[in-house]
Length: 328
Image 1 (cartoon, rainbow, N blue to C red):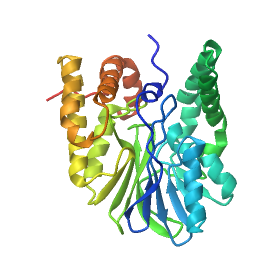
Image 2: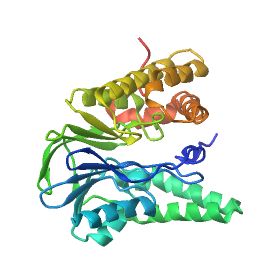
Image 3: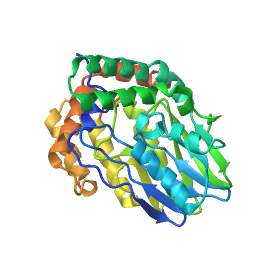
Image 4: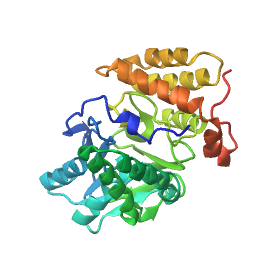
């Protein structure tokens, strides 16, 4: 059975929050992503003020989100000097093209994983979009899907100028970050970074709410990545989707994630696994529609963790690890 179009399940049932900047530490602002009804999501954007200008972590999907980044730069009267993409998902890289237009000297920093995605996952996704356009008579939906194709077709404008191949400290626009590379985790190459001067950790989609978005992930590697995040002495963690977290919040997420994988690897019913996520993650789900969260948890548990073991094996193949480790 053909899978749902990536992210499509996320686009329907939840309202879009505002994209106003929130200061989470001195010189560090978050533009919250959102899910617009009938549309695809935008990931969170984090903006660091550096000596030479602004360092933008992830640039969103929709023009409205990227415009907020440009408005922030305009208001601050400070150019965007660097973009760091945590991973290649369209809701984190699509704004790169507009940022480049506005600031031609900007440098984009990321892993090389988008190259493989363009030839594989995104190519397949583009084909699905074209197929759906041919079947719908809804002009609004047609426009949305054509816009999504245009994002993919931006091609090299989304690619990095500087490829991160190993973890380590990095000076970006005069600000020092510890940049970490995770291989075969949420994608083939995920970056997360820690700013020791403020205690802010930017996790990208290694942390997502209201559920883990497992579309392109190796779950067992993702679990190991969360352990490495927990070893950093951060004060605030900014997830790829959802509100900034305290250490206590992150521990709740990490525990809920581990329990979900353990349950999926067991013989327990899907409903029990979903109930476990709803219970364990409940402190983090304030304001979320429980029916929406449950529908996502059911999808990722039954359709992916338990329904696509062959695909998960392929995603995890280079690491030599099982995609969903057996519960102890």
